[in-house]
Length: 260
Image (cartoon, rainbow, N blue to C red; front, side):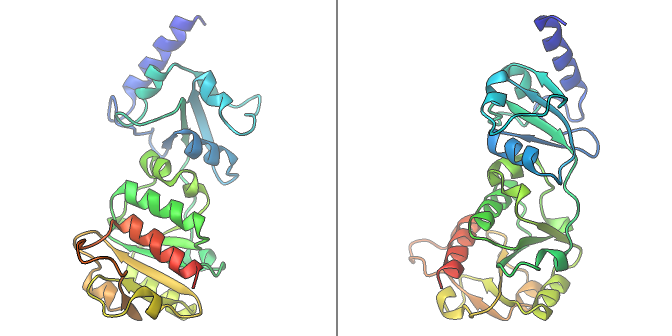
């Protein structure tokens, strides 16, 4: 097939995908990832089922390692790839369509004694991705979210996570309060971050396993979630600022746990 025909087929396929131009949505039951770190991590993850890679030759050359000779690749130029992802998304010459990750159960995820991050209604995919990245950097065992109040697995989450989506278990539960009870039974001390708390995080940290509970920006933790915490703590920020971005707060709290 001539170069012009490849581009034509590519554009036709992109145009038929659900959501139309710039939606960044994959086919039914699939997830579309973009950017070198997110795609490379997904390709290296044996738990991923890969469907197809759209790429520039420069994008494939930037990957760490070689693709199998039979891997389904469709070569494209940057303009073609821009049609497959969210508007203005930095695809870096790589767009991968794959199956979503298998569900992870809480009891499986907490076999590792690292800290657990419980996110109460944190819905921004950029924030969740950034929290995943910090969780991977500081050896967290898992993040836990409620199914109804968290973003789906997506290219935006994966790009913000910079590969951590493939590393940190993401546990989705129906009832967040019940999951917190399970964490307590597993020996975790549950600390909710709240600006109005009297104790600082350093003062509240125990010697054992910790589950950090973070609420959505502005609203904070819901009352029922806060009531399931063993203690509330604050980060000692200057009075000039009311609060921190939730992903920044998560990173600082994880550092505090790592250096206690």
